[in-house]
Length: 351
Image 1 (cartoon, rainbow, N blue to C red):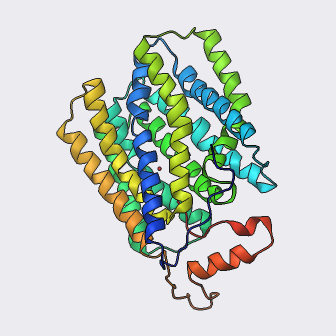
Image 2 (image 1 turned 45 degrees about the horizontal axis):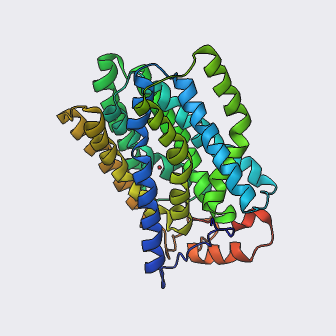
Image 3 (image 1 turned 135 degrees about the vertical axis):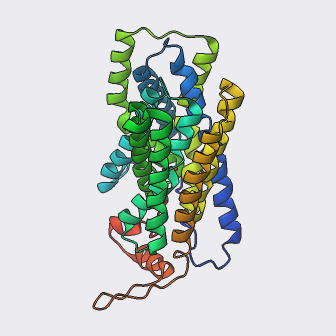
């Protein structure tokens, strides 16, 4: 049976938290493994043209929303309150609508291996957006390596896509998908500590269901979906696992935390994605793909780790004239004791 209670926030002091950390990392790894099939299966679903990108991108959200509605009703979850609805709309816009639709259109022309390299920028983007969301002050190395990762991703896209003229249209769609998913992951990881891991993605799916159902109907009317058993199986995986069950594990891992450390697990996703593309789609693994992937993953990993070193139990020196800053453990204690609805959010952020 699905749990009713939200996942409690993990201790950020590092005291007695090794088991909790291992649990968070384990759930995160399970989620990332589920997500690693998303790019190759999206490529399978749209490659033949039997299903339009709009149908694949929107229809998978409708399938997941139906499952989410059943789960929420069966466990009698309480409704989100106040600003939580607005934050759920941000999650829905990023991971329910933005990422699936943009990647579906991009993968009509881009190879799965190429897309996996561009999407490898996602951990750094998630970390940057989470830093902005929580007003942290990470070290300069964080910003430098995050910027280097962006340059590496755009450079790879330019060389492999549009050549000297710049990234191809599919690469721009992929970069937009990375930005959308980063927003959804960062906000969803924070919100999961208030609503619960699977509850967060479920409410986001239900909230986005009406517009996504309308887009699915428009897509089906314009181009009647058909396909081989393999294409329909890929579509089914996208709806059931990529859009629903995978988020159970991923948001649970982020909620248990520490988010900065759990988010590093995303670095294995492009590696797995390239491997699945080679095995399932017989795409060649070129040196350009390997080197591009190493560059982007290396920069993203350094950015996430440099930020993680400023997290648990640290006290930053205040700037002259600035208010004193406190450790995250102290901030967590203050937020837990607060009575306002907005005070329960975590102080450290989280594809």
